[in-house]
Image (cartoon, rainbow, N blue to C red; front, side, top):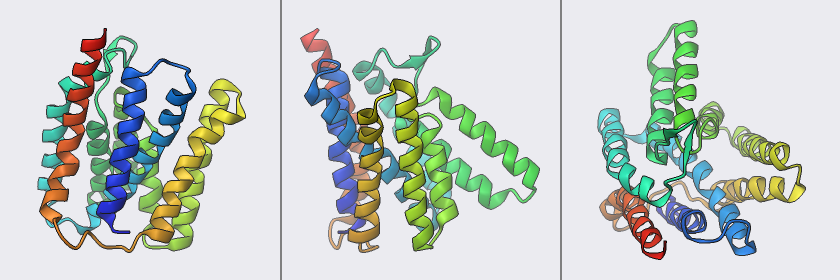
Length: 232
């Protein structure tokens, strides 16, 4: 499978997760299934963010695209998920989280002083508390950055990520089913990337895929937000 094929699958799993969050009744079996399936997305996108950071010809334009579409997606995100937030603050969408993850990679590369580098990374991780996938996405990013091109390290990174998210779910609910529902999709992502991914982009339509992945996020949130308003 190409990188674009796996990212298309991640868009589908994200859509199912967001349908569950925005439109389906909480606690229903189908809702829980769609939520769990969607946990495939964030870890997959963090992996490809790390990979893309190493490939990109212009880090400034990469960061600019993330920021631009994050701003564009914020109102649709709030329409789809008006209750999301921490301590009364508006929660920022996942593209802002990916931008913070990108900045973590940039700090790792550009800041040579270990104390200053560590402090900057901690601040960026803390900033993610106001975003979707708080803390977890930056940690996933650091894991994949640490793994680099080493296949054994990549395997370990996915296992640690699954244990981390599954463990957090288990601590939150005390239910093994919740732990498995959160951890297994991350391992499935690892299987696709480690065993099915051919390391290449799609052979055709690369420009289409490049912009589709950015545009799909605000577009699907806008549709879900409008549907949510229509059925209220």
